[in-house]
Length: 324
Image (cartoon, rainbow, N blue to C red; front, side, top):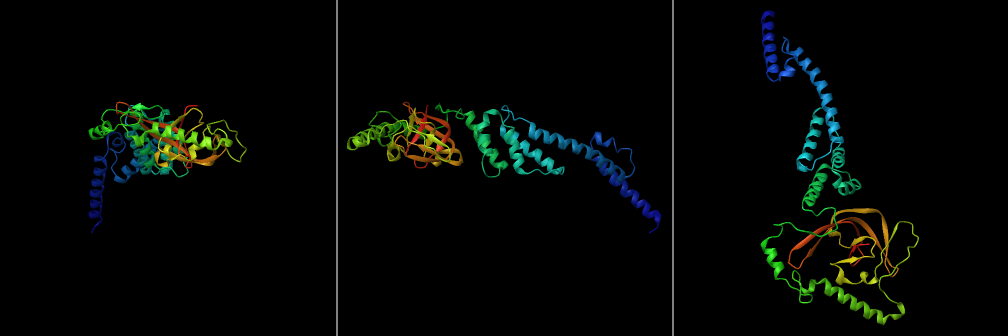
């Protein structure tokens, strides 16, 4: 094969390569290579062009990821997915970020109304990942839209939450003790409270030497870690009738529950907290979090709410709502 034939073959391949490059370009990058005759020169020019644009893109994406603020006018799921897409673009440009950094970026971009959720997730011991953050944020978004987040008040549930079957079932229930609908006598908190009070009075008569066992102010003993005061009678430690009820206590220093499965968001305490009862006994609080509560009203409707900063105390046979 002569040199002339080889040269013609090279020109043909060069022409085809140059055509492939120029046909794939938009107007702006095309203007920088349209007058070039050699495909390699055009390719090198494009590399220089996009290298500069790539650095600018990286700067923009990093700034947007860690300084941007999410909006409540757009679905959070779309905005969080957009953050994941920006991370993928950064990876394609050669900058690979740890997933936990993207998870942190998501948390710091949340609105102030998500402050409690941000604190809970940021203080967890295990490494953050984007999937968990997205799931928790979307759950919180749903709660806020339903009006059940960041509140200890019971709020009316929205229409369509209950199915007709459940509604009919609730209406059929009627307590033979208090006369209210929505529960039966074996579920009646009023009956359980009166039974507990009667048992307490009988016990006090048999143990008059021990003095009155009602709630009283206790002293906090010096211990090696933080203690809490709870003004409550010792009956809460032994009365199973109150295990599934909530008691409103104006003397309780914190909300408390013994049901770990009730917690919507939960984190263990770094150090166990001693909670002293009125009889100078103490129990240990192991964690803290949010608990969903519900209540049946006279019209058979169900109200729900979220209680913040509830202590988890396994040995407490009751659930307390502090109104102190």
